[in-house]
Length: 194
Image 1 (cartoon, rainbow, N blue to C red):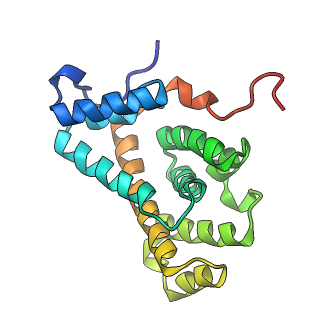
Image 2 (image 1 turned 90 degrees about the vertical axis):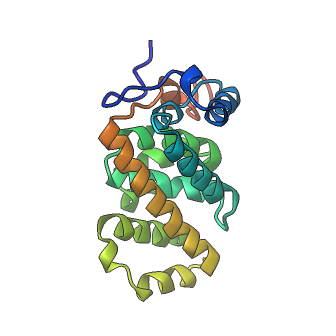
Image 3 (image 1 turned 45 degrees about the vertical axis):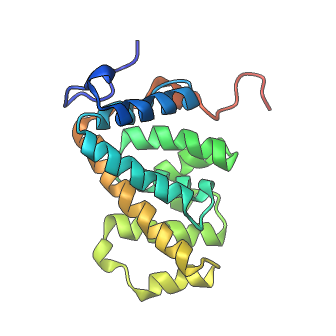
């Protein structure tokens, strides 16, 4: 049996949620093959559910970044913030979108020890500063991103994804959201796979 989606707050029953929230949860369940616990957890407050997932959708659908780059940012941010839920859930997504079973683990532990291009190292260095010491981000950080080839739109998106997942990490940690068991194995080679 899976752990509860979160331990600090009661998770509402699906039937008790507003229709649009129920529909979104059912849609995500059908797409993933299981219900990611973050959807059930955010059902605690439907108005926040809507805002949270609308912004998430904008970040992944209207971006100058690749989906793998988005997930690299999420896993790095979550590693810095010790967010168990997001490290595991987005580590799975990075393994899938990045087609690299090791990168997510490297980024969760320490992006500086990961096998990265100069472009991605610069990106994640800025992500770290924006997460750990946001008051220290300055024009030099943006210029470094431009020098490695990021457009201004992509730079905006780097900051937006980082900021959003700092919020997400803090809510997941505060509510003690638990990652689904399925996330631990997604995107990992099975026995005998090459």
